[in-house]
Length: 343
Image (cartoon, rainbow, N blue to C red; front, side):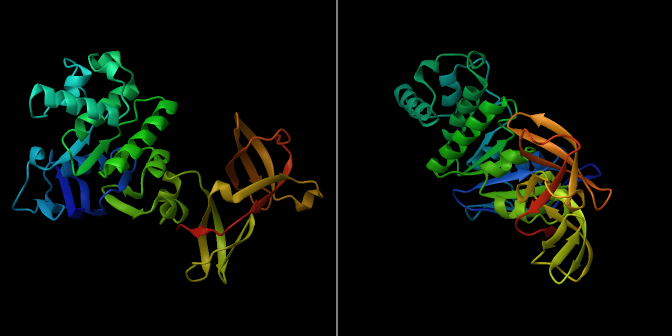
């Protein structure tokens, strides 16, 4: 549906994007995730037509939007855009914000606005209110309804949930994903929040220094990151030096399967915290794998800092809180699944 080929962009001498390639299928949800300054928003603005690439091609439904010699302006692209914090018109009511750009008689527009408010689960009593009189989550729904009013082929979302508190952010994100799926509209979300990207997307693209480091299904990219930077950006990771031999990594935590290991030798391997189970050691001290050095309590979860007894390395692991975990006690670390090499 959307095809980006070799998209590059400079601002002055700064290379912001370098040979970006991406395919977005109809009805899918793609999250572009990366640190600040990695080129996420610039890429979204190029797709929307707010900026012009230096090179490459942008194709939407087999229609060239940019091919070097031709450029389709934003208002002719049939692309919806929801910026951070919604960017509603403060001098227009909720209903008039949604109606902005709609054509038809007053009665027809009113009916369309009514239908759009129902679609995004906005109570009709809010229609005459000003943007500042509704909540942050409701403002985002107004912005989404305004974008959907144009019947876009593609929806672009530029960190639209970042200004909301955690609970509201999760609920609004879930509602937006369901709404876009129901409407059959493909979406691209730009965010620096890895949890948001993983939960929203059917495809995730990790961008670093203007290029995609890795793209794929969220579970695949999370479970098999291509390098340490991607591994750490997408969530908590335990990185261990290991000696690889015969598809096993020999580490300070024990022997771990590495099914896709390259040639034998020294490599860094990665485990995710959910692969580790921490149990107090009730056997003799020499059997203990690690010692709890510190506990960061946060309610249901706690983060343990462990000193691996066979080395001087410490690791941090988030676990379900247990009353018998205390600093100084000896623990065993049980590992499930296999490790991934992330040199």
